[in-house]
Image 1 (cartoon, rainbow, N blue to C red):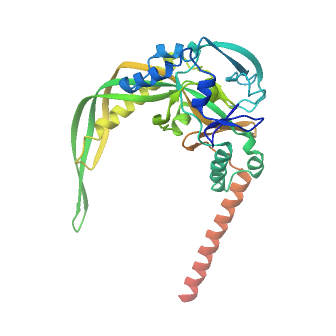
Image 2 (image 1 turned 90 degrees about the horizontal axis):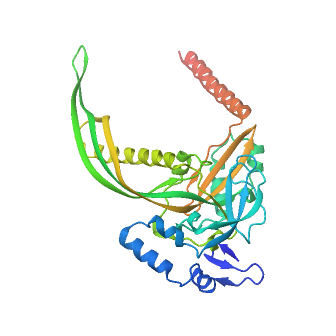
Amino acid sequence: MRFDIAAKSFICEHCNSRYSLEEMNKAFPDDEDGSLWKSVVENAAQTGSVEQRWVSQSETKEAQVKIHICPACAAELLTDSETQASGTCAYCGNPVTISDRLLSADNLPSRLIPFKITREQAFGIFHEKTKRKPLMPSEFKAKCKPGLFNSVYVPFMLYDAGCSANITARCENITTWSDSDYDYTKTDTYEARRSGSMDFSGVPVDASDKIDDEGMQAVEPFDLNEITPFSLKYLSGHMAEAPTTKDEALTDTLNGRLKSASERSLLDTVWGYDRVSLSDSSVAVNSVTSEYVMFPVWTLSAKYKQRDYIYSVNGQTGKFEGKFPVDLKSAGLLFLKIALAVFGAVFIGLEVFLWLS
């Protein structure tokens, strides 16, 4: 069975029969009594987050998965044990080695967001971006094909937390006037202080060492209204990376995001000035709870002149992230054409001026 993104259903590769997740769960239940996910959804609706203890119940006892280990960058990717027989690393493009492994339910996420964007749609988004890059090397563009896009469920920790913040802001009102001799500028400077407490819900932090945090934040946000209880069935035809980031690094990233958001929230309450800037701040993060989830991302890895270029497309919304290489020869020719055009315009203008004078 393969999970078809466009149809949002499971498809048999042999007879083309289609089944919904409910039908699959009825035939192949993830838990013994069939009541697990009902209780998870009900509790999640009441508390706003899923406790970590629920993760251990996400599968009956243990799950058979394939482990894809990249010999080049050491990425460890998981797939279901049936549908993925071979593959390439989603991060560096090298072939991966495969082994079967039993995972306990403690190592599996509690929820995930299924893919909505297909491979063809992801490539279409990438292709539209390349149209706006006239200096992109043609040989690089030619090697980027739809088949190189890999669908990966990226591990995230989803945090709920509270913050207490204090900020000091420098505020300025600027007045200008002139007389017959001089131009004047007067700057009145003030200090504004703000304090407040706020709660944050569903703050995502990617738990993969192979993905740049800022790059993954660039494809956010994910719509958490479409998150669903985890099932290995969703891994059909896709890969899922195991969490590799240490808790200390996750906490540092979380604190950085919450600090920035808290400062912006308090700065937004300072108004009535021409210019406002942050002078000082202190932010304390407390009451942190976390949940291990997976979000869908299409990735493409391509190499150009010994440098790896990695592109990401949000598998739910289609938001794109990635930087393109520049053909220096084409850039030089373009600069030369612009310089010649400017020189020609100046020369013609000068000739016209001399002729008229």
